[in-house]
Image (tube, rainbow, N blue to C red):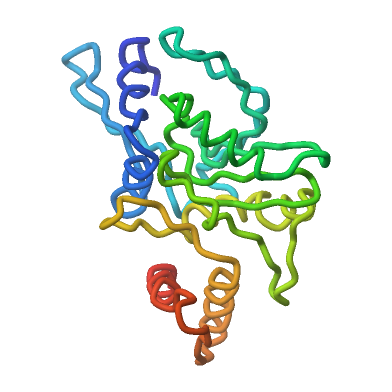
Length: 247
C-alpha cells in the first residue's frame, strides 16, 4: 500500500513504545497478528489497517529477516554521547534481538553492563523499543536474557543455552547456529516467551523448557501421549501454559 510521508509518520509513531513489555503486548497481536492503523491523508480513502507481524508466518510467508551492524544511536539532548550497537536481528523491519559482542580478552558481562548503560541513556527508543531479547558474548561464552528496563535487567536472569542432551552451547558460532538462525530466532520470540502481566515483564523460556515443548509437539503429531518431568521450581507451569498455547 503506497503511503505518503505523513501517513508513514503515523506508522512510525505507533511503533514507539514506552517499555519493552508494552512492545511485547502489541506483538502478541489480535489472533496472532500485530497491526497498525493509518488515517489516509486523503479523507475520502478513510482508515486502513496494515499487518506488521504475523506470528504464524515464520520462516517464509509474509516474514522477512535482516541483520544489521554498527547502528548509530544518536545522543539525546546533548546529555550523553552517540553509541554504536554491535549486531541487531530484525523481523519485518523491527529490531527484535540485540547482540553486544566483546573480544575474548573481556568478560561477556562487559556487554551486559554496556546494554544496561545504553538503556539508561534512552538509546532503545523508536523502533528499538521493540527489542525482545538481548544476547551478550565474548566469543567463547554467550548468554541471552529477556529485554527489560535497566533497573529490572538482572544478572541472575542471564541464561546459558543447552542442547537436547543438556550440553552447554556457549561458543558464539554454535549459539548462533542453534538459537539465532531462521527460523529458531523467530520461534524464540513468537512461541517461547511469556508476558508476566503482574510484574509487567517479558519472560523468555529456558532451554530445557523449549526442548520439552518441542518434544511434546512432535509426539502429538505422532498421536503419542506422555508427560513432562521437571524439578520443583523449574517452571512446569510456564512449560504447560506454552504447550497448550502452541498446540
